[in-house]
Length: 188
Image 1 (tube, one colour):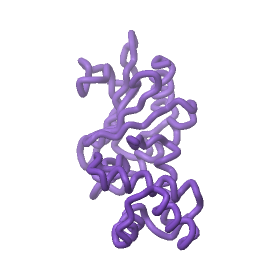
Image 2 (cartoon, one colour):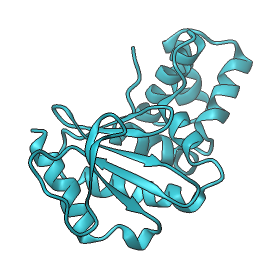
Image 3 (cartoon, rainbow, N blue to C red):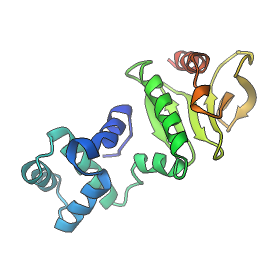
Image 4 (cartoon, rainbow, N blue to C red):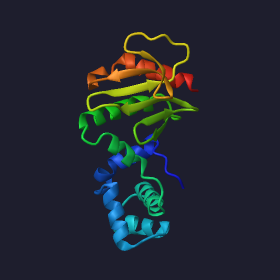
């Protein structure tokens, strides 16, 4: 089963240390030390011996088995790598993801190596830590003239018609969220 870090799965991974007592990586090490391979065996270990709830145990087991099979790195790892050494910027990312999650149940986050794609029926934007001091929010907006913080580009980043530069958490204003919502609405 391919893992797709939708908002709910990402929230589970983020809350895992608090709710289960270990990070995803720590659970992976424990499972590897027991040399378990089957989903049911992993579930039994996590639920029976460690008291992990079914939802967390299932998520851990699925992700472990994907990695053990040589699958792509967990998408949460891709996001972590993007913000390595940029903890303030990671907080900006989390704030944006929280706001985008309010738009609807159909929002999908698709982390890539350098950015996170925001999708609905189709991509409506990306969140990209472009430099150590700047995050770019790429948006797909048809027939929209730039104004305020919105910069028009020639298919910026190869995928987005416009972008917004963020230099601090204070730059995530109602105007920025409004442009994100407009892009989301256009992707439906």
